[in-house]
Length: 361
Ligand code: OSB
Ligand code: MG
Image 1 (cartoon, rainbow, N blue to C red):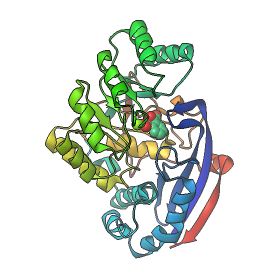
Image 2 (image 1 turned 180 degrees about the vertical axis):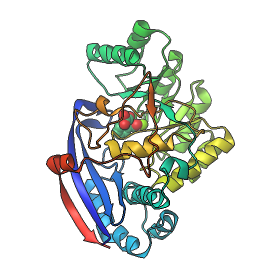
Image 3 (image 1 turned 30 degrees about the vertical axis):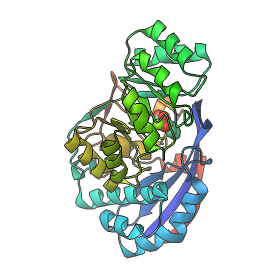
Image 4 (image 1 turned 120 degrees about the vertical axis):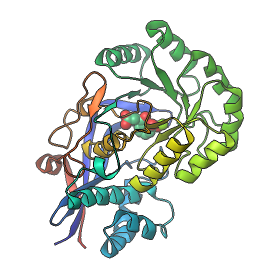
């Protein structure tokens, strides 16, 4: 009996995560479970509030139950699913939750790891940390602990008014560490303020302007010696091509959910490899299920910068998978069991969450 369940799981974050668009206290995830001969899993990276993108948990659940389930009744093949789902505009995160589950299923049916199915080669990936906006003392303490733990790269969230002073302080305390910043679009209308960040020798400046302002991004990229990295602007390989053509950025942060799933992700991976565009994998504070997809994707050689994938215990007291992701000297191991190679702890999931949708296919 083929069946889809959607669990809503609410996991408190150890430390609230503040960005230019809001504060997140917990990860309120939608976990997709397919059951039949094999069980397969996916995660929607949406949350309660549409702060990062227009999607949230309610729109994702709506799109899944009112449209995507119908497509699943026609096909369980990931590529066919993507083609058929094109008649639904946008809603990439909802599509990705289902599509990634289908990739897990496909590799389990073949009896291989998802890593092998997508041509991943790395056995471990470099781990970076994305640190939210915090009071200065707490921020300095967190950066110190992160360096001691071995993270390969430190990213700080910034916004106008929380930038110059912070960077001066961090450079003064820690010198020449691999440092980047992420503005989550907060400098839209304040292009000159971005130019002031050029002197801090950052690895990149992530998404300084609005996601649809490729022209503005191109204008400031021409004036900056620091590369701009695009996050929210990239919804497809087409956007990556626009970035390259306009020189609106020189580095890509790839998020599986934002581009609608693994198929589009792999096209972006290939595009970056072919065009020598530096590439890393972003994060959305995922539980162990979404994290597994992020880690596995990064086993592809085209990922040549540390990403935002940190171990489970950076976020949660307890993850929803039986064996949480851990970090050793700045590296996270890539699962090589069948499919995503991680097993959800269903008892714990039922304790901290509930089934909000269930339907036979
Ligand atoms: O812009 O990269 C971002 C988290 C939620 C929404 C947007 C972003 C982030 C992060 C955290 O930076 C990355 C992570 O640790 O998962
Ligand atoms: Mg970002």
